[in-house]
Amino acid sequence: MAKLLKKKKRMKRFLFALVAIASLLTSCGVEKGVKSTTISGRFVGSNIDSVYLERVADNFTTPERVGASALSDNGGFSFTLDLEEGASPRFYKLTFPNNGRAVTLVVAPGDQIELESAGDIFLNYEVTGSEESALIREFNREYFAASDHLALIAERL
Image (cartoon, helix red, strand yellow):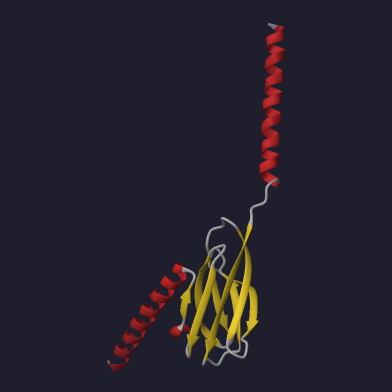
């Protein structure tokens, strides 16, 4: 009986040691991979000379500026982000100096997002490489067209 109790104690210590080692390995051991993500494009015919990339906070308060890019002579810009593989998609915004409307994007690790616009960026931009961002563009286009129409009706009354 005494041998059996000693054997149980050793087994408990062994199991405890295994659990401790396993938790240690999972907490600080293996790093997740990083995926390179790009957001690039070309804006021509607008009166802007630079673009800012901002990550929207989880609680939608103050965004964090993660990059700035001066437009090249042909209106091109590019941002590269290293995002943790398997991370959830996040909201980002492209903002412009002296322009109140931002372009909202949904960015996931590994995305290769391309934007193109001529003239008023917010009204005329096209986006590829992120289906969610394209849906946001579609929504904004319809929403602001309806808003402008209602404003026109209110003005006539």
